[in-house]
Length: 70
Image (cartoon, rainbow, N blue to C red; front, side):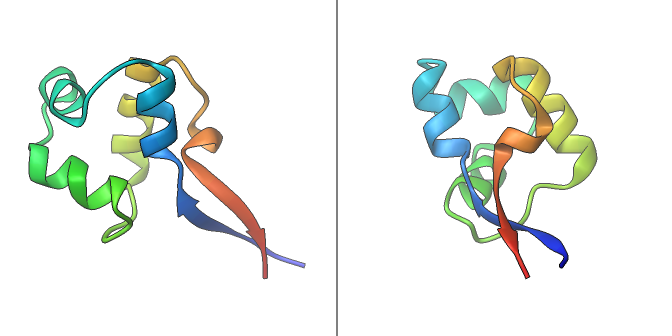
């Protein structure tokens, strides 16, 4: 059985941190459009960006996505 990244949980994590997408963009250096693409599952978050985001949101990288069995 393999594991894969499921749906992005960034929307939930931003709400938990009481942070807007614009604030996350400002604090990480990514564009607001890029953050929106991640939040709305239009693109997967690259590993280097996930590391940066998890640091800003004080969470583990694994929390950024649901885990699904394939």
